[in-house]
Every structure is written in structure tokens, then in C-alpha cells.
Length: 431
Ligand SMILES: [Zn+2]
Picture (cartoon, rainbow, N blue to C red):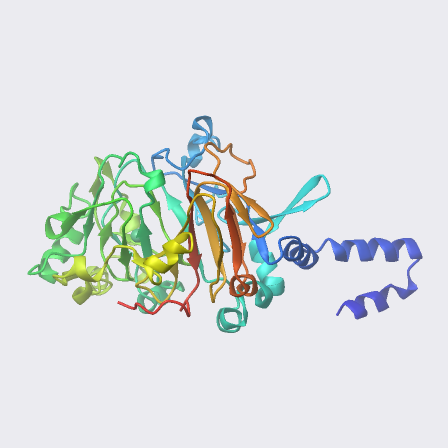
């Protein structure tokens, strides 16, 4: 292809040929390759802040206090930071260009060039996410985020692929982990409603849904709640009713934005009727049986939700051996085939080499030091638009070769969260 373009130039004066060649060099493909070369297979990403018009920020994600509403009142407060995202935010007509999409930062002399991770993966996906994922998905099919809301969310559902198809969307599983570093306070309601209490009938739930416009439809009367605990998490398969509590949450998830709100009043705020029908095709709005069918009933009334959906961290290997080598590594999200996540701790003053079989994105939670040639650190406060050295994407090749991490502190551990794509070959603890 390149040869063809150069051939086309033959009839042009030399100056235009040079201009054409220069413009080729500036295409995303070249930038992506330069960035891969510069980071030796590790791409530096910039912070991706996302506002939500219906949310009140919990102010735990290190954004400067003056910047939580910097996009203007209409856009709402910023209560999300997205990681390794090639998925645009669905934020209504006011959504800004590239909202929700991660950018790569390429240092070029004294300036920094920014371009989309999505463009880089579209251009050289195999080199970034590896052929195992590229051949199957032709994209990076997950992202992760911090979700930082002061109050609880309504009991809601993410339909499965089967029901997602009705509106041309993918289904969506998601997972939660509550990082201790971001949870010194638990917000207004640090509890989660989860599933449907055993013994509840479909008729009772259908009645709640039919009462959606009568004020409080009381659907959580038929649910059990659990206290949320920093340093643990929950697994939320499609079709599972859940009302997330107000801890600041790290959320690996499948790339999809499908949802429907089944609770009409939460935290004294009314949920608009259109959000109940948000995942229903237009010609079936009003079909309450369809809403009940979207609930995976057996999953929701399972009496062992704590045993089957709660996630306490699991060491990835022999803990004594890992600790003796200077680190600790745990699975924190491990019940889904669509993604997984780890929390890696490197002890003060230690240097370790960590190998993974799959590409991953990472966010620094604590400490500072080096990861291969990159500085890694954890800013205390970030201005909107400011660049950081706390977020990266590690290519499959670099992950497999092993990433060398040095902790430069004599007292503080390095802690990072790592999010992986589907079917991580290293994950053997299904269910
Ligand atoms: Zn959800």
C-alpha cells in the first residue's frame, strides 16, 4: 500500500512528494508504531474523565476540587475515569468528541502528541492486543473505569446478548472491586442490593415494574442487601438485578452501554420512565412481560449469592514464594470469561519481573518507581486535562516477555490494578 502511494507521487513536484511523505508519517499508524517503539511495547495513556448528568460526584478520584463541574452544569459532575477504553461514552446530545476514549501520549522532542488508543488498535491490533484477541474480536472488547458516586444507583439490569440483540446491542457483564486507596469514606449508602430474594414470584416483580410511574415502586423490598467492603468485589453477569452502593468502584466490563433501570425512586430522586424502557425496542415499550423475561430468574433467586457472586481476592500463585520474591499478586475479578483483573503489590525497595500471558491496561493506585523504561507514580491531585504517569497499556508481547518493576520508595508499596481482555489464559479459577 505504501509503495502504491509513493508510486502515485512520481508525477508530482519534489516539494509535494515530501509533503505527502510527511503526511504519511503523521498518520495514526506511524504514531502508533512510534509509541510502541518509544515505550518498548508499553503505551502511556492520558486520564479519560467522563461526566454524568444524573450523578453527584463522590470526589474520591483525585480530580482537583475545582474541576468536578468544569464541563458546565448541563453536563453534570465528573464521577468516572475510564481506562484502556476504545468505547465511546453514550452521554446524550451534549457528548463531546472522543468522550470516553483513551488517548496515547507520545513524547516527541519537547511536545507530546496525543492520539486514540482505538486508532492504534485499528491500525496494528495484532501488535498491541495479540493475534489471540485480534483475530476473534478485531477490537479491544473491554474497558475499565473508576465509578465514584456520592449516592447509590437504582436497582437495574444489563440484558444478555439474547435481549441486547433486540436493540442491536451487545449484552453486558460487569465486575466491581473497591480499592482501599479510594475509599476512605463510603459515600451516602455503602450497601448493595443484589438479585431477588428467594421465594419472590415473577408476578410480584412484574407488579413493581407496572407501578414504576406511581412514585416508589418498592422493588428493593424483594431484594437482599450486602455491606460493601473495601478490598473485595462483586461479579454481575447479564440479567442480574443490582443496585450499586456508594463506594468508589473499579469496574472492568464488556464494551457495551446497555442497561434498564427497574427501581423508580432512589436516594429521594425519581428515575424517568424512559430509563425503564432503555433496553426495549420501540415497538415493545409497555410490554412488562419482556422486562420480566430480561431477568435471569435462576441467577437472581440463587440463595448462595455470597458464595457465587462475591469476590474476595485470590493469590495468583504460592503466596510465600511471591512474598519472598518481593511482591504479592492477586486476582480481584475472576468470575467472567469477558475480562479479568489483578491487583499487583511490589514491596518497598524491591525490583521484580512480572510475566502475563495476555495484554492488559493498568492504573497506579499507590507508590512510585519504574516500569521498564517508564516512570510510574500516583499523583495526589490531577487537573482536568493534565497528563500523568499513572496509566499504561502493556502489549501482549511485552506482557509475555515480562515487565520489570522497581519500587523507588523505602517505605511505600507500589500497588497497581491490571485489567485483561476475554479468556485470560492465566486465569484458572472459573466460578
Ligand atoms: Zn450495572
